Length: 317
Image (cartoon, rainbow, N blue to C red; front, side):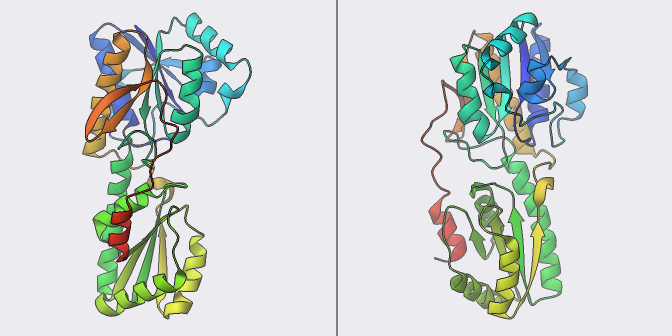
């Protein structure tokens, strides 16, 4: 069996650990693994490289991806299916192991299935917004990165009271990541794209918290609103200084946590076993803590909004 690994879209911690685990399994069983440098654009243009499991293993704890990704719409061309099938046939490739987030799972995987290609996808995005799975690779690492930053903020907040701290997470248009961080770290308020909020309510809650404890911590997803607006309006409404910390793309490139490394190995084992049994098309999903292969396409119903009970608890609603 010969597998090509493709990373499409944004990177996520744990991808390197999964590549190393899958390549190691293949090597033990006499199978070959190659990687496409530059996503599907690289695969179509022949930018393929034999994966050195030992080299990838040394990088398995690092963020990012040993295989370069791409957002180029290489599969949108009318002849993309024919070109991809030809590239796989010329290289004698039997199947694909695909890493990607919400867009990859929703739009790319169905195209591959329509073209009759054998492919197992591993949902990999810190946003944890892929429908049909409780967990995506990289989410825990991104939460851990935020925790380290917030602990530093709390230290200086206690040392010099009288400030409101805003921490902006990544997450795109979804609030799963921001809510997970805010709920676990005991934030005083959290703002998510899925739920509306009032500035009067927010200013009052933060002002009361500063008066009671000496500082307030607000966590918000990047998809909510311009952070500059909040840093401008909150001081006017509360009379309290505001300090903004943006986690930015360093959060996506965080070192892989133990949980993400473990999930990477588990997902890779499941994907390898599925492809070894013959042509497959599906996704490795997590449901109630159990990993399994969901055959066929991802759910098109979308993922439910972030847990409102957790949201209300953080915000004291």
